[in-house]
Amino acid sequence: MTGLRDDALGLYLSIPFCRSKCTYCNFASGVYPASEHARYVDRVIQDLGAAGQWADQMGLELPRSVDTVYLGGGTPSLLAPELLDRLFAAMREQFAFDPDAEITVECAPAQLADSTLAALAASGVNRVSLGVQSFIDTEAHSSGRLHNRTIVAEDIRRLRAAGIANLNVDLIAGLAGQTFASWDESLKILVDSGVPHASVYMLEVDEDSRLGREMLSGGARYHAELVPSDDSIAQMYGRAIEMLAAAGLIQYEISNFCRPGFASRHNLRYWQRRPYLGLGLDASSMLHAVADEARASAPPYVLRSTTTDDLTAFLEGAQPVETAWLSAARQHEEAWFVGLRLNAGVKVAALKREFGPVMVAAAMEVVKRQVESGLLTSSGKTVRLTAEGQLLSNEVFQEFLGLEMETATAESKTEK
Ligand code: SF4
Image (cartoon, rainbow, N blue to C red; front, side, top):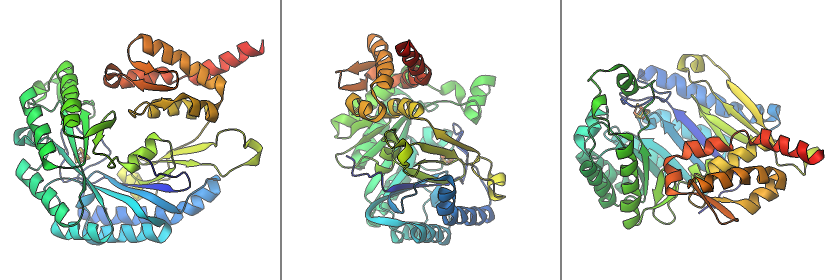
């Protein structure tokens, strides 16, 4: 499932433009005039050109070989073809794309012009993620989406005709007005479409979204009163796991399902903690420090940096807002909570090799408690979330935060 290398890079570009704002969305995205698109692309291209110098200054390895590229958003397919051409040309000028690099672009159905599709295919895009969310027209419409199921089917046909057959469809369980019957229907249409990858998210309403504000303060504009209960959403999620598995789309991560060989290689980079460079609004990077003999026996330090989520500030040249070196203890915590997202689970021996037995022993105390609570299973060699644990994953991951302190306490006790 991997094929990913630490000496190659995943490249992420955030494109924060949308044609309309979905009711549940709290991403750093919005509706902006086309003139802002061009300024934005200029700034991202500038950052692509400056990435090498920035990495040198920070003492970071910046692999020049790229094996995954992901344009997310927002709706990257809203960029004019010439802006997409410029972005891909700038990426290829700075980095060498592997011949089999996975190159994904997020597209909104009904918002993919023929000229854009031609530009994507000509730029080497070989994977498209479609933000469908529901195949039921009333649900899609009341969430602020601009498509219907006929248009989605037509977009899938056009993408395949353009040579892009590696397709993902996103669905959300818990949209306003959704019922068990309508959810089953959406899943069935997804399966019948033959796409090799699906992402299924349980609606998490954020108070910064229009739907979230309505749920807190009342109102009927965004149909907050029709949002299914948490229990119903959990049941819908379980139903998705069953129906997709029966159709050969096997769950490999909490929210992701695929036919064999079609896992999202770019997202695996995040879950396997491999280096990536994120550019654009509200994008993160994770890069290794240049090897240092003085700490050769310790895990490589990594730097996490995040850019601003304020478009005006970004266009005016704001630099990364958060930059932090992650200690080995912090990396160890992350290894647990990103590793547990994957159905393959966390391999205990690999973590012991990377972080040493003392740190991992502190984590295994957490594992023991969570196994007793029914949220994790452990064979001693591999630790995985249970079905219940997948529903309550944030609570499980929370337990692995603060291990740094527990490890320090364990070490000081050992010293006494
Ligand atoms: S298309 Fe995506 S980013 Fe844009 S408003 Fe909808 S959910 Fe948010």
